[in-house]
Length: 393
Image 1: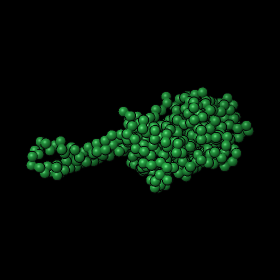
Image 2: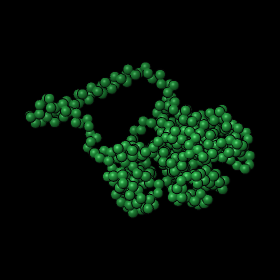
Image 3: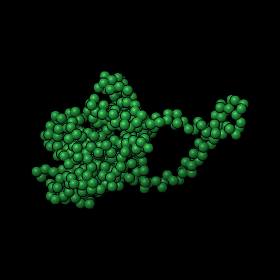
């Protein structure tokens, strides 16, 4: 069952869930590599499902799969799913192949090819675009045969490079110290699937199916469970290091004792609201014509501030960066009607202010033509960012 997605989710600073998008490489009519007769698409999916199983033990973590069965998903769509889920992390799992007896695990982040070998790994994974419909138009800016072409692809992801490397190191540590796998390090290469995401992102090559022993290990339930658990543990360690501490569901019964106190707190708050309403009404009941009976509906008015900005507005998000960029056309390739908003520890920069989705599509075309092909349409209702589907309703 494919994960559905319809538009970027609203960005609220106090985010109550840490969102992790798990991406099982290949799928459907794309088997990936088939070293020693093993299927990369099946192994990557099994590992991803194990990661999800472990992470779902934590109630403050939301897991989103790009696929959770044997389905083919475009590289373009995988990144789109992560962006629209407002993900905090994107983790893509693959298996390696080589014409030698190479073995070991390596984790990639988006960047320049440090050597020919890294380029060949990225080229192999990027070649899946030829199985997609309309790949000529979607990936017109990419030349997977040119190492130099990746330079332009890294710009959008460079803001997340440090965090991606941070996660990559934790992953490699778990593989090598915990599972005694050969450490092939954290590397940089131009993976299209990583370029499509706007959050810290890694691509894991879990091992070489072309190596008889390693292929057998990765194809086993034991190997898949161990790899999945090691990856989940690295995600949890990264999450905690970034300031988000999780408590697994299994440990939830312990905090039940103070629940009566938690229930009392809302009661106090409810009382305060009840007290505040009469306090607010005298300010509104300055005219003697207002009777106590009419005061009650007026007292409810301050509780509904949202309708102040009614209607839906569409914009085109051009980029997200930690840099503060003056909202001038010269800084955005001549585009005007610019705005920005806080996005995690960065700023999202938007173009246009459309009242209809059709107008927003026209703005998107203008943004593409100006040099922002990875821009996408976002929607706001009453000043709050909402999914496109909700806005279109």
